[in-house]
Image (cartoon, rainbow, N blue to C red; front, side):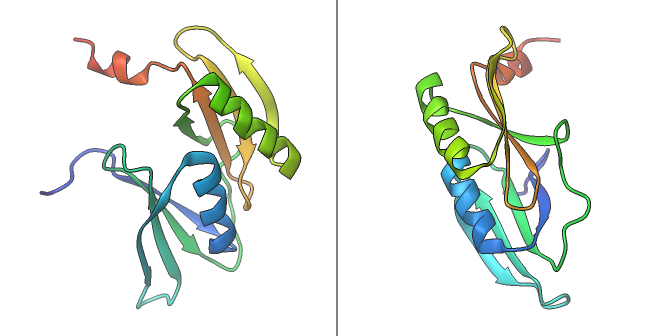
Length: 138
């Protein structure tokens, strides 16, 4: 099957192992592909939560510029508000919580921002209804 639509986002990372750990912890993502790029000799990892055909491509680089930060971000929906609060407690302890959780009502829901090891922003949310909104007839 050939993929169509939005399939991935690629992020430069300074330490690929730290980034893999971050996205495994906070976004329930796992490695689905790993290789050394033959041209650049950079390590490349594809991460997926296996809920849809979409991956985050991590590419090892010497420096990361620019970064996705505050308003440019990746968004991940959590299973429950309690699960999100538990992740926020870990993020707070690890010093990666950028903003305390906030409930913005429908359709945004309960959300927060975290900082990944390279300074990219990850939004965790509960209660966003993107799936329902995109399924509505235009």
